[in-house]
Each structure stands twice: as structure tokens, then as C-alpha cells.
Length: 355
Image (tube, rainbow, N blue to C red):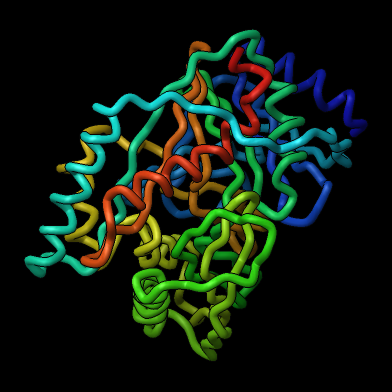
């Protein structure tokens, strides 16, 4: 499909309130699109049918789903826009900062009391949009972050969810799989040669250890890469790649249930940190830090990505979600600044629609 034909189809589907998903894998200019034929709200449990899934943070085996067998499926070469990615000023009141830092201080105290070793704390921020265009959103999102998995999901029941995530939950091809441990954050200032503090190294190691623990009964031939600095847009992270072979009886749904939420978005231990988040964050995460992505070939091939660096757009309001991993050595002020930096990823996309 020609790119201009694709954009016309997206605009038409959006006007008619018909569900669709557009996505592109890292380092490619190929857009994959799936346009549902009606406005039904589908769900997936087994993750064994082709389509596109959007799962919540509080995942209990059910995700939203656009089924391929009730949709038109296309591939299109993407025509990139060229624009400068510059910081977008944000106005955050002192009360907003104080509330978040107080929550972080309480979380650090909880960790010091031994209830968890890491808890990921997040916050949302709403931005009023003017002259919103789903096509402009598409062009800027997919042009700005070529090294990320980029997607736009739309359903009239959910509004738009979109993002440029650097983190894989799990990729599967037949019995081979790969995943990653991603944690620690620094702003990219022109060089990927940086120093990482013990707090960030510990945070990343916790993610790696938990993933390996969860996979040891489900997979064999596990291989773990050296940890390295990975650039995702304007941010740097610590990353470790993990590969292996799934056992014959292990399903995609079983792997997703085992890994999600990873310590990179929930904490450690898994259940205690997730319960703390739901009780104390003060807002529903919904699909932020859930997982998103395509399932192909009846579940024997899939790319499920952690829904980070994302936002929800509904009724001309963009809600951007940002957070960070908290350990006993965290500093609330530094964590606040980290979330301010992370917010820039989606603000760069929205910039021409903010004024």
C-alpha cells in the first residue's frame, strides 16, 4: 500500500471510530497496519491468534485485541519527516513536585523496612492539545524514534494509545525467544560513554536476576549478554540481552504471565511491589507499563513490548506517563528530574499540537 493511501485510510478509520493499530519494529521503515472491520471490542486470553494486543499493567490474563481475521492487514514503506528534536518546556507546580517526592520518600522508607528491594513509582501529566491530527502524530512518532518499537493503537472505547518503547517483554519465533533486562536512566548528552552508579547497576541486576528466575522452568539454553549502555532517543539505559529455547509445553501466554510486570516497571518482589503501586500511586496506570504488540502465525511468532514512553490521547487531552525504579539508595529530587527528562520523549512528538 502506498504511504499516502495508508494515511488516508487511517484518517478515514479514525473519523468513523473504527479500531486500528499501526506499528514498526526498531531500525526499519516498514509500517505494519491492521484495520478492524467494525467497532467491536475484542479480548485475548490465550495469545495464540494473529492480531495486535494491548494489555494492562494489572494484567490477569486478559488483553484487548484487534484480530487479524476480522481486519484488513497491510504493509507500507514509511516516508520519514525530518525535524529537530529539541526540549519542550513544561510547567510543573511546586505542589506537583512535592506530592511526587513525598510518595518517593514513603516508598524508600517501605523498601528500607524490607518489604521490597525495588518499587517502580510513576506519575501522569495531562497536556491540552490544539488542532490534533492523527496523521501528524503518526509522522512525528515514527520519524523521531527509529531505534524504538513505535505503535499507535486506536479503539473508540480506549482512545489513542501510542508510544516509542525501548523494552522487549518477549519475542518468540517458533521455540526460540529473546527478552531483555533494561533499567537505569541517564539523559543522553552526546556520548554513550558514561559512568553508572551502584544504585543503577543494582537496579539493572535485579531485573536480570528476576527474568532468569522466571524463565528457568520454562526454557533451556539460556544465554545472557554482557550488560551495556543502550541509547533510546534522548535517554540512556543499562541493558542485558537474554535468549534461549522455550520448552515444548511453554506457551506465549505462560511466558507473558511469568515475566510481566518485570522489575523494570513493577519492582521486586513482583507481587508485593505491584500491590504497593496499585494502592499508593494514586491513579490507574491502565495500559501504561502493560505490554503491546503483534502476534503472528497463531502465536508461534510474536513481539510483545513493554508499554513505556507512551501516552493516551482522548478528547484533545494527551496524558503522558513517566516513572522510575526506586531503591533504598534513591534520591527523590533526582528521581523527579529523571521523570521530567523521560516526559520529553512524547512531548517531542506532540510539540506542534501543544500551542
